[in-house]
Image (cartoon, rainbow, N blue to C red; front, side, top):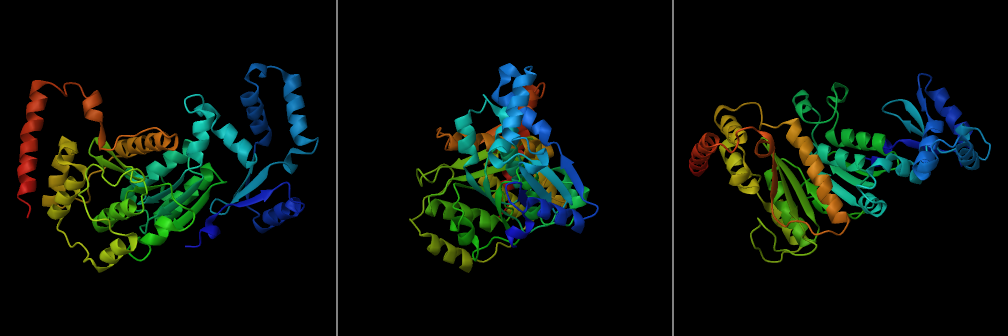
Length: 393
């Protein structure tokens, strides 16, 4: 897809033709919705910069008049046209917009950390769980530049965990994610891949401009999932994956920029990127039964990280062919938060754990979770689950 076609149109009031462009837009779209709260944004900007003077009306008026230079407010900032919404919004310029939008992040996130998070260039493959990650990241003021990839369209059954609406049904998930990002940050730069990532375009996604600082794997294709880790390791690109397993959300972060020897991955010769892509191109697609898929997924996430609910649901999926692998919005959204915090640590230069970490709702909050009876039930079913996995050839 041509990513430029999906971008919102930005009309800068600094342009000598801004009024003509605005009139042309209004004429071409007679049912255009206009959102203009520019004065309120200027007031917020004043409150942020001069918190001790929020009641000083004289200083407030002076501040606003210095910005506007006594011109009408419509002649300032930027007018943003969202074609998919047929809506025109009047917003502050990029830097001031970012300053106001992230003001309440401080001091939890310092100004320096905020800029570091904003400067990240992030790639996301798979936009179910990936949608929660990228939205959380952008809402937190991060990732000015993003690459998103997914070949699937939104189905009704996706609405139990993807932050979208019935109006998005049938639309490509990468397009939905891009629209959501632009509606949060119209100044973002987004590259959209609405086709399947495979051996023919994976290299382009990973190394073409804009250069990625981290790759996030949320794809369902198990062959791609394997080669994505291997290729990320070959080019020393940090690799992040969030896996929701029942009522647990698992973080898997590999700092391949620091070391190729990371937890959970077998040692291999130092293959080049092209050698790995050729092996990927020649590999046979995995034709796995539901049971075999389950076994491979458990090998990736770790058997000890699969909650009791997910163990039961996985067996039900493999044996009785229920509609899909069980997933919940609560764990998907929590995973988005975990990913954003991980990226904040990474962007700020902090050390991060080089092994899998899990957040368990049950372990944290469920009454009686550690009672002898509850522990006995979990151990008993875990043994059943373990034997079930071992029975899969």
